[in-house]
Image (cartoon, rainbow, N blue to C red; front, side):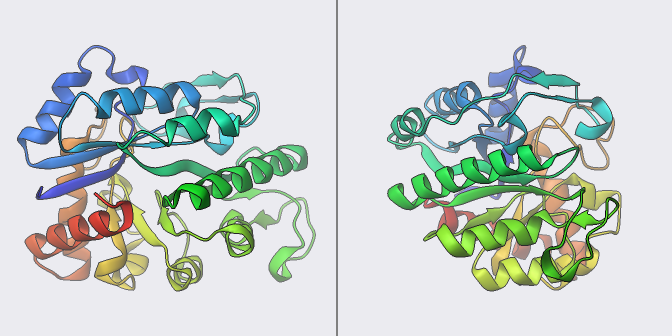
Length: 290
């Protein structure tokens, strides 16, 4: 087994077209396994193709990202350091096409799926929820864990005791959890967790793990969540090519840098890095069946 695992990367993205195999080989040579995640049908297919190039240590998760459920523009600031602005053409979720992809033995989960309320109107939210439910149903059918993408946004809201107001923060975490409680028979991971203690406790109580990115190496915003998350429910990820950790900020991120995130989790929790690394690998094996 590896020393480290990056449970959420996008080496299947165009940012790695020039050196994709070198990036994967660098991770494997440094005792780091990689799960590449699809965001549309094409990147889901490429994640599978990449996984099948390697006998061991590279896996795929396939699904439709909520920002791709409709046409939209995403700028560099929104995507973070290393991001390149793009326009999403929008994709109509085709359950049968994704069902075929799920038959590949290198596919270990469904996602990244969920809710993204950033710059999102009510019609977009409705479409996101419909496609989220469809992907939950597929995960149930194949007994595969979910890889969740959840992001809050400023929209009118009356849910969870919030007053209706154009400036209210619509909590995508609790909206997603409400859907999961109604439809999901499986559990999984909340990727790039960016909620607070209340959201963390709600997802942990429901049986999900939480994963953290390089963001934790340059802000203390999530220290309290990490301290209060049991070691057997925590994961490490890079979300490559985005949000490179210290000391690699400003560069394109890649899976081999996940060790910096593990190191920071250990520091925050006051534990030995080896203990945290070992636990995270065990968590990934349990959740993704690898």
